[in-house]
Length: 182
Image (cartoon, rainbow, N blue to C red):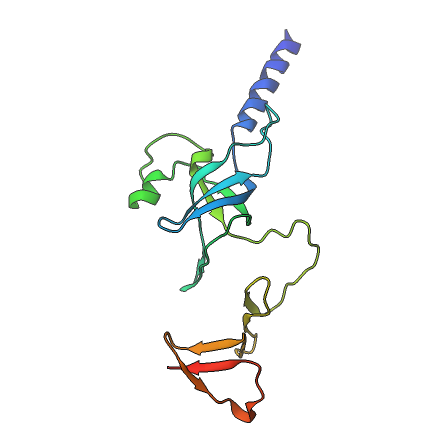
């Protein structure tokens, strides 16, 4: 009897564990800029069937925002992201800002939020720095805010102000960038 009870509780515990979603790695399949959501392909298999998770649709995409500063960018197909599953139903919070939960679901695939963080799975290079660097992959274009407060801009064309079209001669004229002012 004790052996059967132990197996019963082991099975119940295993099933509970399989139904709790916390975080996973996923790939962006498509992005809808009209409502900032994505269709994602989880990069994991289900514990019970050993099959790949089905795509998750209409998942809100978060962005880095803290202390009054934001970094926003649209994800593209193939981007690898972290997907966080909230403890409770997020539907009302996301739709109208109320904290009342519509359901009693917990750790559900329906309550996912994408964290657009770079996941360096296969490239072992470590490009961390003490400066804040915002760069465009595949180019040598970046903005770097240094620890001392200086700013470095590196791009073929730098525009100062929206709609800037007037080229500005830089001191000594030896720059590989063209600066435009409004």
